[in-house]
Amino acid sequence: MNNTVSPLNRFKNHLQTVHREKILFLLVGAGNTLFGITLYWALLACFSKHVNYLVLLVPNQIIAVTVAFFCYKYVVFTQRTAGSLFGSYLRFFIVSTSNALLGSALIVLLVHHFRVHPAYANAVSVIIVAVVSYICHKHISFRRSPQHLTPASTKEAAHP
Image 1: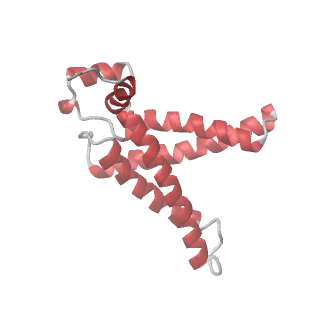
Image 2 (image 1 turned 90 degrees about the vertical axis):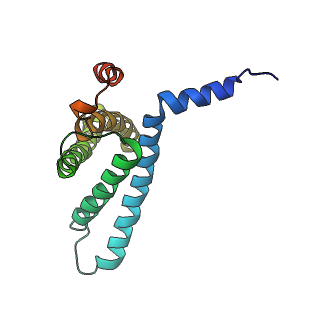
Image 3 (image 1 turned 135 degrees about the vertical axis):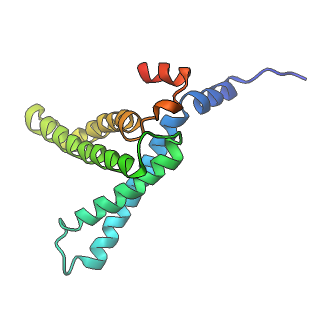
């Protein structure tokens, strides 16, 4: 019997062990994005005759960010986090809102100052904000409790 592992299986194992958190972050983010879009459509369908479409962005943001928080907390960043659940949620909400503002600012900067087409500016913005979002959520929103840090995770925190 041959115990050699195929290159494809080695690659799969590498992804599962080394990049699992990043892959889950992207998958959960994609799911949360679809949820937020669907939720906004539902809010528009139910309330747009009585409430301005811009006002509906407020409950949409609160609900979508809350759902995203629990998805990221229990699917992606499953280790124990520092502080209370409310503290983690508040940090998550601030990071998420800051990222939305960053994305908007990047699009304006790229379109108005560098004359990039808005569609391309949006694509660049999404990539940059996704990276910033991962780093901020990992190290701010869901930072590990000091008592739950291991020597390996301390090295990881120093060199992400």
